[in-house]
Amino acid sequence: MMNKITIEAVYATAEYQFLWQGKVNEGTTARQGLLQSDLPKQFPDVNFQLAPIGIFGKKVNNDYILCEWDRIEVYRPLMIDPKENRRRRAAHKS
Image (cartoon, rainbow, N blue to C red):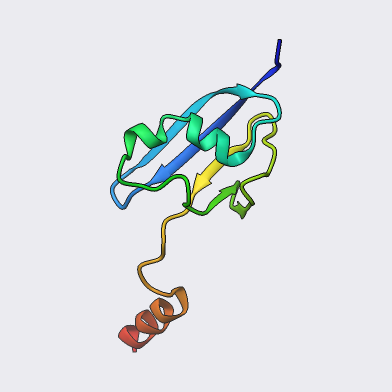
């Protein structure tokens, strides 16, 4: 029998965050864990096969092997470059 580990997967929209917690087999990759979560069912319009992912704020490859209590984060594309956003805010304050 395979050992199970507990993981989390999170996805955020502009309105709210969705957190899933569940168990996967030891040796599961980050992409496999994400696809086994409820996120694909909750957000059918998101391509979870290709979306960039990370663990606790650090981008990881699809083949990253999950550890107990890892949190898979799904990253959305930026709507505006952060540097440009800071420039705009600074210009607006002046």
